[in-house]
Image (cartoon, rainbow, N blue to C red; front, side, top):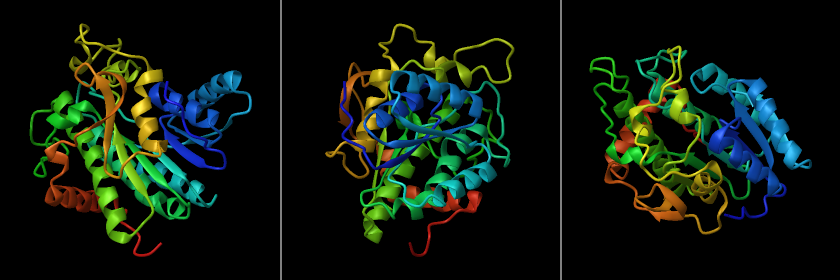
Length: 306
């Protein structure tokens, strides 16, 4: 098991911290001494997760705050509450939705997966930059997916309004966008001379409620998505599946703009290993164009000065 380095005195935000890899990341970071802000859409579920972690780790420093990545107003409100507290050492962009069966939209009218998985984290990251850059060694760790390698950024129809909706292709596009966010943020930090490390991770085939929650949206009965119906594939639990994300978030050897994931059996399971960033996430022109589009859609831009 990956041993998280000492996080005493550091403050971390973990999105989607009430379940799955987010809850495990919060547990492990708090266990290493971090003060963890659990950003969750449903506070009651967050409080339940906090209580479960505290039962195992009575000294853990955890607080629950509401944030809905599908609502940019909620993102701004949450970010303002963090900025009011001053310094932030670590942002873990973990939360997401996977493969809802029909096209749905966010509060702001964006396609749900593109809005929740990419535009929400993008806006959150940029809004929190002043607090991050006030820290001595800040990091942003962003969860992508192995499906990012199959994704395409279709600038003519980012919201899947013209094409026939595909739950899986839309998900792949959103996770490619997440990877681009991590890679482009690392490049921006380098260009501006910021002491900020941005890296990405993917969990392989880690069994969480993500597989059924998204696919069940709008349905009376739980359902699995096609992406997770291949039951013969090797799979792992969250204790191992979260480790690439923790590596990106805390490991001294993590590299800016790097991608980490499970190192065995087609990248689906096993200990953390570095992965080659797919070419579609290394195209500078595409990355800059997507960043500019995200600024336009969210109304959130890089600060001129920090």
